Length: 377
Image (cartoon, rainbow, N blue to C red; front, side, top):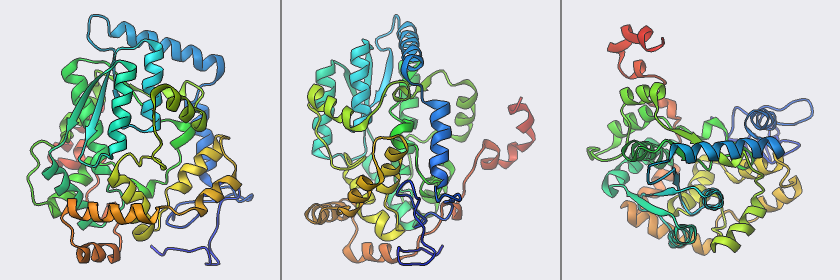
């Protein structure tokens, strides 16, 4: 894929937002110069975001259902906590609603000290129990290194796939029917598909080709179980933030005041690896600045204007002193030499489609294809 820069005559930026055609070959623009992501946002907001009385009615009804289903059990629901804005505000809302929450934190070895402190404040001030799911570091590192060797863009898939698999497993063992979910439309819907690939088969194939350690405890759901869960999943994940007013700046002020939350300075920067990945690897190897998507989403939802977003983009994506410290830490933790990392950064990127991507059980196990009709009934 040829990567443009701002001096290229073919370069184009959305007239409404800061999304552009750098590192996103699939972006399109209408006759007004507005990109497809704006219209995709509007469609998602119309379908998934509920405002005013309708939102409050749906929210109250859902809280009542979660409480009713939790009767006789220790917990009403599960909340995955990272220490970030979304999950922290969800914890605040859950406390206000009187829900009995089991907070689950996924420890992949990359927590910042600030993230740990924020999580401690959440559970202490909300009075919730915390379960920390600690991943086997050697296995996790081996998968991350396999993604580096594969030269694919979505290294964070290694964490994301494990988080949702772990939450599914905990729901099953604790017999909890509900997960309250921080994903939402108004702050994080905009994300080019070419930047992500949360595909179990893709992870399996990348690790099969480049990994060196057998995966014994990494919470990867088997293809057969994924298919069964899709049909019979005994729990539901609820994006509660789509039912309430969610202004990012106002929410930050509230959780700072109510839960002693401290800002990280970037979306998902509660993880040292995520900070290094988004602040250095993405822009330098893949020419992707994720701030463009995050800021554009806030423009689409009316929480920011383009002028303010452009000023934000003009700031350094990674403070120099922090980058130097993180670089040393990341290379040491991953057992990367400086020369190996430089070679990785200069190696051309490969698409996730260079490796197996299955969309169904039958793609992964062709011998089962004769049974496809039975599963589709």
